Amino acid sequence: MPPIADRLLFPIENQYDALNTIPQDANYIVVLGCTHVSDETMPALSQLKDCSLARIIEAVRLYRKNPNLTLLTSGAAFSDETSNAQKVKQAAIELGVPEHKILTENNPIDTEEEAQLIAPRVEGKHVILVTSASHMPRAMNYFIQQGVNVTAAPAQFLVKNFYGDKDWGYYLPRPSALEKTSRAVYERFGQLRQWLSS
Image 1 (cartoon, one colour):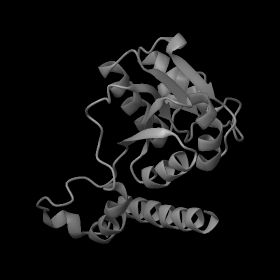
Image 2 (cartoon, rainbow, N blue to C red):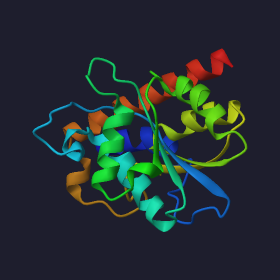
Image 3 (cartoon, rainbow, N blue to C red):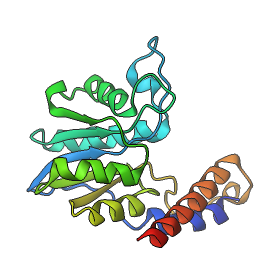
């Protein structure tokens, strides 16, 4: 049911607002990894799954506000032939970001490793962190734990117009609500694991 799913996910996604003003001292836009499926018959953008696509679109939107920033894409290959960092880099180039403005971190397999491996590369710099809105609270905690000066730039908000008026169809069951509920449960367990290991 959408009303239940939204109430589970909204408190997680709502912890950080969308970023519209670039901090003047920002140096990097870090795009956390997600997933893709390599298929060279398609543009790189079409090979990205929703989470990676939403993140790179948001990163490029921010980059266009200040082209002096450097993008840093992240994410391992897992079972694919190409790392997610490399595939997202290819997509950024398709969107007009010059190749020399993009760095990659090809080895981290999860968010904790991303923070550990990226932190030394951005030491003393101001980072804009791009990831899905539901994932942002956990990601921010990992980067802050590593001493990174970080500003959140959430993407892929699944809950929209939470406080707005709803028509009758909103109260009917639909498959998209299951995705939201699954995401909320996944992130709550992730936050619990993070708290227990801190």
